[in-house]
Length: 78
Image (tube, rainbow, N blue to C red; front, side):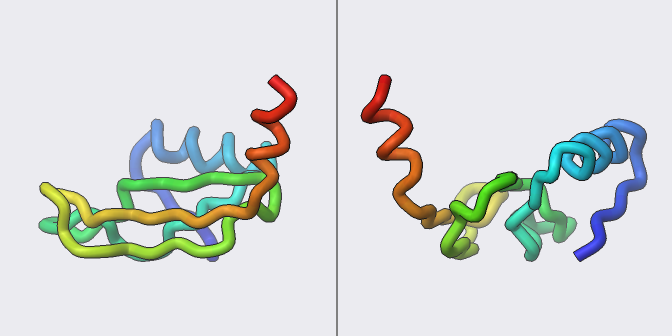
């Protein structure tokens, strides 16, 4: 999925993520009126198993991210 940006800061974010091999996993609007993707989830490793966009929660929809257990190994070593 190709990302696009209208503003200068948005273009910087897209350039940063592209230059660092980051994938943006949220693909559907998470904010209502206007419908925009404002809640982001980036990774540069295959750790995201599933993303669910739920019901409206304030002015955003609830985003639930399921990831694989690589983080438990990382935190166990600290």
